[in-house]
Length: 267
Image (cartoon, rainbow, N blue to C red; front, side, top):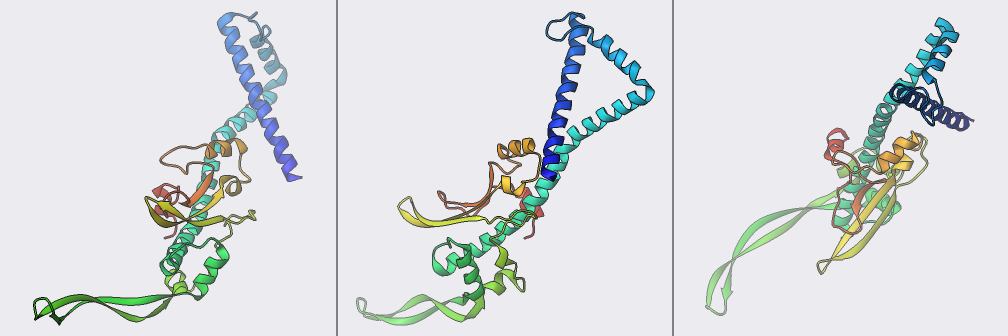
């Protein structure tokens, strides 16, 4: 029912906007070209004045209010859209940054990235980092060529212990258990996740990609403004139809959002 009302309201607003535009064009055309200008009828200005006179003071006041509301909505809609967009993008980016940290930890232990959230969450629950210490050392070794003892320098790696991946990345928080879910109220959708090993200049390189569409994030927003947002190409915005972390074709753990979001989002 609410969707039906919203759709009807949208079309009524569009109809009103079109009517106001045609009226303005008609008045300007009549002023410039005279009352008998083609396509717009005749005496538009006179008919408009007669209409206003018939409405009386209260009618004119009501008409002014209607136009004022329409102008306010046309100006305020993009502002409200950007406020909602930025708030939701920040939530999504926070989640993507958690996923990035988890993937980097996964690769440091397994040599590749995880291609599933179940595997990534299980890894966080159970895996441990090996804590090591590197130190320089040296010793004397007999050289068979020169037949003398010679100094040899080496790097000694000591294992100091182990640390939980979960504690290192998330402390006491268990938010990682929901990292697959898009964190927007009213959205019942998961991030898509892919991982592979690609050839890059003759080397096998692990890559991964996580993404979610702007359609999902901004599902209940103005469709015209959403269409513009999906087509955005700007250094200050999130380009393209999706929010994306990583890449399946390039070696990258970056997202497609500008650094301004990183400055605001939770580290």
